[in-house]
Picture 1 (spheres, rainbow, N blue to C red):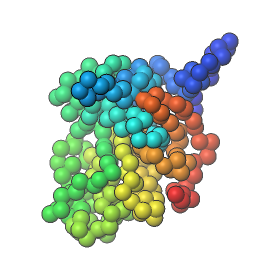
Picture 2: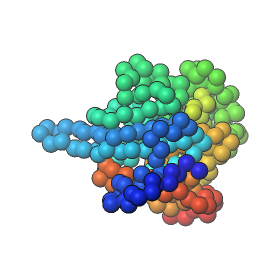
Picture 3: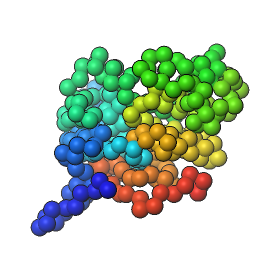
Picture 4: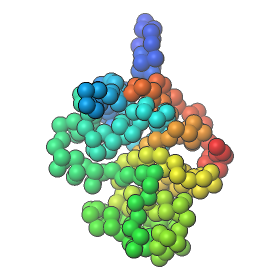
Length: 261
């Protein structure tokens, strides 16, 4: 419902112009609005351009998959949206806040109050139970869930008192998801959350993410290089060479149970 029709009389001449129909520069309902994002790293005398002029809007309640090969700019884009990094040029707004103008203290506050992160590695504290690992985040949140409620949401209510060593890889990742959502973030950003998992446990992790998105209405963006996962998204953003190669909307979202890769 957020796709914008192309203006009459303008014929797209390249990939970038063809996907402009999927972004809305001044849409007040966009949670994120990025315009002209570039990110350049310097390694010695070599300049590496991780992002090359990215325009993208993400909307409340969406489940978005960021697809592309290693080095395409997916993680760099996600880190900028999440306030873990800043662009070399361009602007990124979270609602009506210009994150590009934030200092480090403001970005820290933004991450703490609005963003949940899930990474490929779980980063659980071995000496704490699942509930205690989740509880660490609730101590800094203004209106958190009960840790056990968050674990119920990801299907681990009966594992709340188990230590990480007593949990499978998929269960540990779901604890990490519970930890991320326990502070009731507006945005959940996930970087290869199934990258270290086998097919069966990966599907269970994706189901947990889909349930969070569905029941809490949390904007959820998931990085993957696995094209099969794209079928469960509302929209699929494909990156290549630091640019957005395409944006497409799934007319019908697949169920996580139908995935196989």
